[in-house]
Length: 114
Length: 115
Image (cartoon, rainbow over all chains, first blue to last red; front, side, top):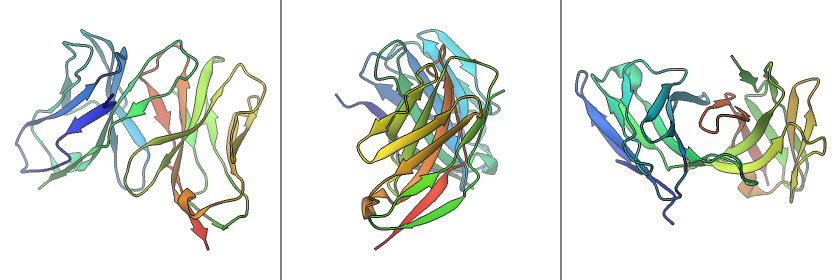
């Protein structure tokens, strides 16, 4: 199993550009989430999904869109990039009801908006 | 809304010694999970230990153990016999029982291990 994969690893954008951060998991997990991590801070939830076709907002959703058409994929779209969106983005997947519950994290995408 | 507070931005410990990282949280729920994650310089988030709120027994994983005080809403991590590889940022996280996709994180504690 590859676990949770994210592409790209690093991206530079200009203010106003749009882009999509890709996230995929091969563990058949029902839950997927996007977090951002700013310097010196913990992870903050952007959006999450409880299954294909179902998404909801987290703590900091403004400026981001998500959709979940398959169990495996959960892309994050930046509509019009702003310098305040410079951050490291983590995708995570998880399931509920097992004995080893946790979120499995991808390696992160570092985004720089100029 | 739930909040997680880590009051120690930085901690240091001598190799082979014991260190305790603090975490407090605020919730009105009774069924939830608490986690400690380790984030080394590679940025990969690694699960260290997990505690289910309904379990009174404190979780342990080898050199890592927690002191879970539900009434006080406190969840500290004890690292015994500290090793150089334990140096990292440590995050405390809360998650309600019914939503495995929605965790709340503290701001982290940077742990330095001195040889």
